[in-house]
Image (cartoon, helix red, strand yellow):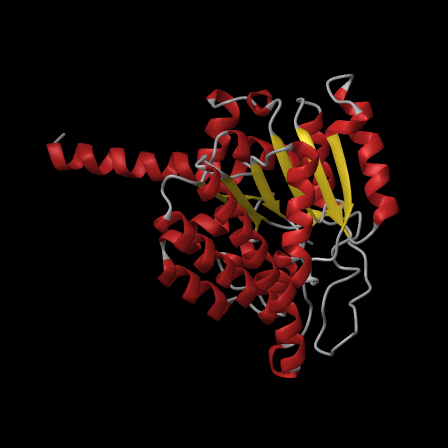
Length: 321
């Protein structure tokens, strides 16, 4: 066998192994490896982590996963009663590692941008410091591209982008002023990596998030920035999702027959990404991970794929059914 033939076989085997892994794993390969041999979530014990949008879904289960490992928490969202429920569950799951004073519940609307500094100061008054800010609050969307009101675009960007950027800038200034290596994390979406149908404003917002926080990673290599991209997950995100009209919510629930990742699993993988200070990761059940790798590393295949797969087929993949 010639040298070049041998190299060719190795390349084919490499891609074959990767395709098999992409089909089996529910995360990107880096996150999978770190879950096996990386830093444990318990390495974050004693740190202070602020999670926005912590009353349900991914934010709630990330909080529970961190509480199990002795992480002090700031839980914020609009719904105060639900936050208190999350706090009680976190204390129970911590098995004595945390006391009530170690979890600060802070009812907060991210759209109250003028009060962000006040909320941030309250966190510092309570704990004396902040180690990680997790920007998880946001809403999704279901609408046809041509029907979307510009007002909806503006409202979605205000919540999913501008409020996140504003709070993060406050945190960055704090980290720099205190001369500490801070950590900023943001919940993006697989829609921020490859465009998805019927979510144009949401997709654009997530692409914008990648631009903002990618620039932050470049400008501040002395700071940790994590962009976490979940695929379809079992949460109630569709209930509050934007539509094409101002003030109208989608109002539907995910179906139990959908092939989605559980919020518990998503929260666990998010916690691993934080513990290992990873830059960008994605999670999702098959075929999400496979499609992401193919579309990201072979863009022309993505163009071919979206051209010859029907819109209904793309919607089924997006919604995991």
